[in-house]
Length: 110
Length: 112
Image 1 (cartoon, chains in turn cyan, blue):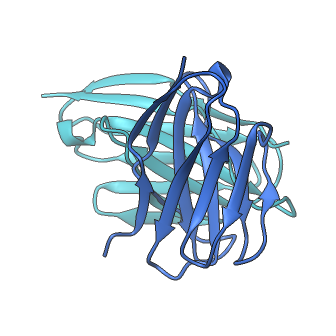
Image 2 (cartoon, each protein chain N blue to C red; image 1 turned 135 degrees about the vertical axis):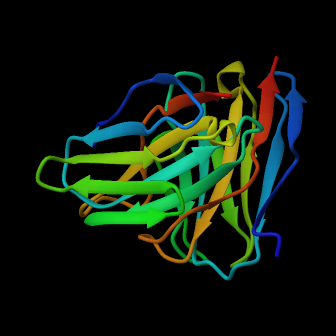
C-alpha cells in the first residue's frame, strides 16, 4: 500500500508570501493529484501530473519521480487561497482509486 | 452543468437504521467512487465502479453496499448504521481510472 505523507500539516502565512507544500510517497505511481478543499467542504481537483511541472495561474505543481516527491507552490498568496490542500496518488499497477495524504491546512492572513 | 450531485447534504441516523446516499454525474464519466473522510485521516475509498455494471471494493467496504444503477448514478447504502460510520461521505467521478476527479459536495452523516 502506498504511504502518502504531506508536510507541513498546518501553515499560516502572510498575504503575498510564496507558499510550498510537500508530498512524498513510498511506491511507484502512475499519477499524482493535488486537490483543494474549501472551508465549506467542497473538493476541487487542481492538478494531475505524472512528470515534470504544471502551472495554472498562481499555482505550480512539480513532481520528481526518482525521489517520489511532489511540491505545490502558490505565488503571491491571498486570503482566498486559505484551504486544505490534499495530495493523492494512483499506484502503478494498483487497483482503481487513489491513496490520499492527510492534507495541509493553509491559512493566509491579510 | 451540475457536475456531481450528492444527496442528502446532512443526515442523522440512529444505530441500526438504514439509508441510501445518492450520487449522480452529468459528465458521461465511466468511473465513479465513494470515499469517506474522517478527522485526522485522508480520504479512504469505500467502493468504486470502473464502468456501468461493475463495482469493486475499496479500502473500507465493510458495512456498505453500492449500486451502479446506470452510467449516471452510483448509490451507497448503509443497511444497519453504526456510530463508526459517522463521517463525511464524498462521491466522485472521472472519465477513466487515470483522469482528474470531480467531487460532489459531500454528505455529513451522524450515527447516534
